[in-house]
Length: 388
Image (cartoon, rainbow, N blue to C red; front, side, top):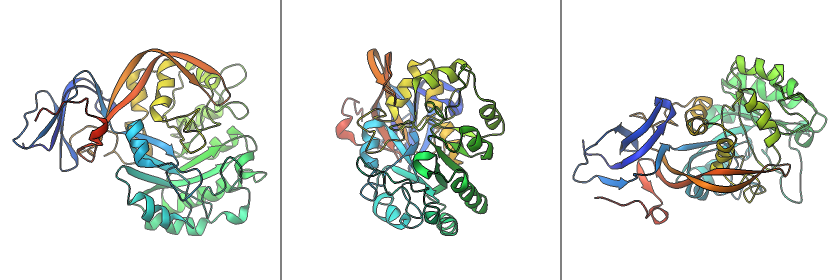
């Protein structure tokens, strides 16, 4: 077969296939064409030598804010892809039904890297989020637009993967679970999952997870006290265990205020790993403490998660939450995305949102990207020899 591109001789870690070994990965017409040993190139096949590197399915960051220029918290999704190896950024509620059209036309459709989105039930999405202005969009119940949200989500199913809502003192004031209830009604109406943000109470962590359905996502799942998922005694709250048992996804959503090493240590000590690892990258945390997706992944690697499970939480598990299983895999027929990684050894200083530092001996680094079946951004990736 005359493949378009072959990645030659890398260590392929693809949890969707329970695969960890030296393989070639071939791409044709924007899809994965083959994953095996000694794949033979055709006359026109581009071959890249990735021996000594890890080849993973294209990383999915399940919680980002990439409505660049449309909201104050948006970053450039393509630049994020280049630096963090994220081939699919999932924007979580930057836009609501009132400004979705601009997000789609001016950002998503012009981007090279993939962007999907959870649509905010708030009419204007997250519109007041900066260093000088902080307005909780769910605090004013008049801003909730369930009918408009359902209509826009239904008409844009190619890009909208679910409904987003933010609840907590900072985002919904004294409204409690009322915005969450509205968002759940929308999600039920359109047959989509919901992603719920949680910050300081009210409402409580338990109140929120008790309302979530199978397939819904709780982001900021390992946040610090108050509203942490662990008890003062270091056990996992029963409501959290019940929610996982019925199929709720627990997503990291690091961001600027939503991830603590203390919480993560307690959860991991109880065998409760996150379902998905995401950065919640935006303008206020891209320079720390979140930085990017691979830094967030590195923190969990240094806390004891296996490399395979860290990659799983950023690929196939995220695809499962998105209900798009052609993502996050290197199986033939999957989307033609791959991320080239290394794991550096050394002494690395990591910080969480409350200022605690962790010195780790490993760091995951993004070295290159295959996007839609093509070697992407080659100026940054000249280290990989083009064999033919």
